[in-house]
Length: 235
Length: 303
Image 1 (cartoon, rainbow over the protein chains, first blue to last red):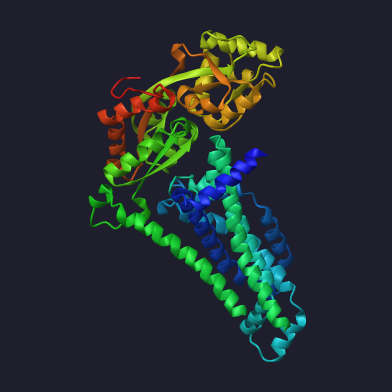
Image 2: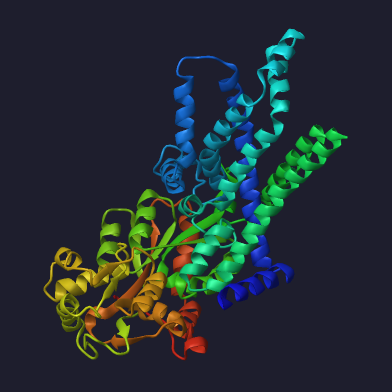
């Protein structure tokens, strides 16, 4: 138990003394995961709309495939991204292996299927009357899609946040394609992995607590707004 | 309200994105490399390429030696040095694929093969120390003071009969793992037979540090380089039992990867490591903390 308590004290110390290295690692972690979430949302939400609003052969199969990718192991994505961006690989000429950029790319690949699938579910949850009403009022396809998307905004937001959660917590991908370079590609999870292997359990736990706090802050802001706005609507 | 919500979320994400980008570009502008200045007419495809990547064996990383030397090199040459740690096998693989510019490893035969195959320019030894066979103080297998080969023979014999005797192997194709295989071969065993001989032989598949921690938890024997062992000694209840024998010599060398885009800067790193000043620092590294140096400098010697 004392190990946990010590870790908590260490975490508080690191946070409040503003340890520059820890702060830099935390900022980098947040930067990489938020960028990945942003780009993944940019890709996933339009694709989810295309899937939801169109009827085509194999739609069910496509959704099943997407759902399979919810569980794709991070090390597998890491291996694929490594092979593609390694100098000997097809995109090796870019020379971006072992950079934060390639970590963002890897995380986008990792979380996009998850976000797309959950957004499709979110859109399916909207009552069909809303769509019908929009169409009967003369809405074009784009307007109709927008109306339904706005109606499903909280569920879509949840999809985005779950994607963020997966991005910020993964370690296999970050270590394989980022290389855990001090001051460049080291994130909270890869730092934890290294510190644990070096026997610095307390520091590692402290980093874990910081990671959890960051995730909490990012998750809590939208849900706070959601609660406030639903209270406004009730009035 | 929904507009505010969407706006806020986009703002947070964009801000984080923007906050990350200038951080990268600052590094780019503040660290012009000689490699970039030698060809002023040429625009590099990506600004981040002003970084030199060195893949190092875990033992040089876990002892803190690279953390100590990295800022000195960066200050001296105005370049960002990225230190990637991995076992010798993986470091060599990165070199073969062209993902790193320089490697520092410790497995002579594989290094010579790497250079002979045209992946490396030249093998330059820069430091050495010794491997140790370490184990619990009680020494249930009774190997203390033996030769490395006799100790291994004793370990496999006792390991198969006494449940207290266990050996933890790196099992990760690293230089240390290679040395372990060499000792088994020298003692007259086929490595595959040893590997499959029973539960006494444990493979961790991880770096030297984690392997030492695991050996400590299991009260097992293991083979370690002296540098990592001293760096971890404070946390361990294991003691050195065998420390003499020619086969235990552990030579670290630096090799410039043939496909590097920055041969000049890569050569600077070789010169840096073999310079009198840095050789002197390597020879004294660890004295303050452990009371004895972790490495012996050996630039210019054939080892």
